[in-house]
Length: 44
Image (cartoon, rainbow, N blue to C red; front, side, top):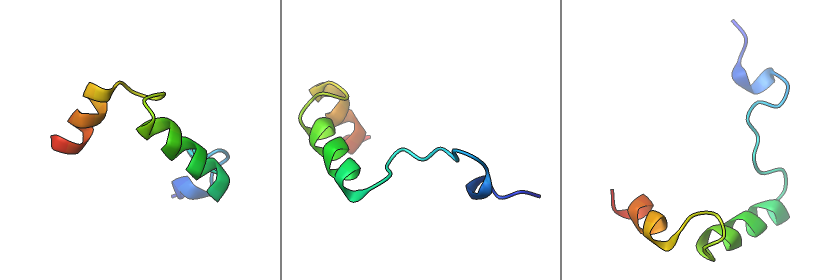
């Protein structure tokens, strides 16, 4: 059996800490999902 982490492009979204920071700023800045969806993510 092959681990999913050993396959090519194993679903990586973040490749560096700078990428993570960019993503988090976009997420909480309303550029990824709407404010209502963001609220839902943290309340459901």
